Length: 245
Image (cartoon, rainbow, N blue to C red; front, side):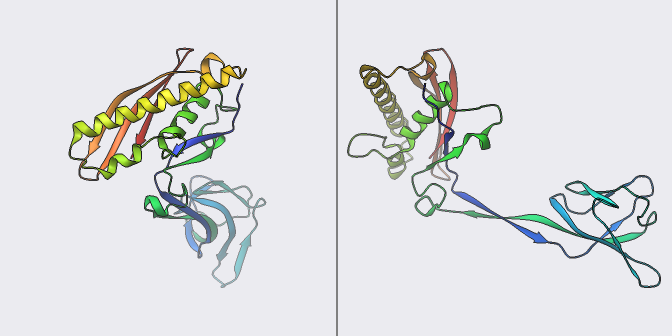
């Protein structure tokens, strides 16, 4: 049985760069009713320092894991009697993640390198799967064929070329989409037959029965196409996949 620890994902051409920032000292008000205080940031990774300036202008330092802990991403919890008095304001500095989002054109996308799809670790997609076999492996392989531009050996499809035509002719677009998906279906079925002729055993869950188009939506304003397909195997399992072009 084929096992693979990656899934093919449709690329949205958006990259997110995450980096850590140390906050300036932020005022936090000591609660009068509990040992938990709220901080005005819900993305805190760890606390750098907690301090309080008393009436004599002396700085009182509080120690992590001794006087307090980071209770959650936006809360500090006091765990000792060494703490600010109720309703007093004290200073907290912390480290948090900041995300910078960048949208790319297809040809300039570093995530998919201009092919429209990329491999993603299955552990990032779901915690319920140990490996990609059966219907999951089948879906991965079919999507890869659908989103790969056809090469000189006939592998892949011409789905990406559909947008290069007059998208206002919706009937013709839908017909071409159907033809390309049928081509991908036959291509993969023939590929699996070749494997079996060479003695490679495929389980019923890994064998493609058919690919059925459930819906094709054309967005004239954004010049995009959304295709919902259902991929079925010989174990009578189905998986619905949405593809955006």
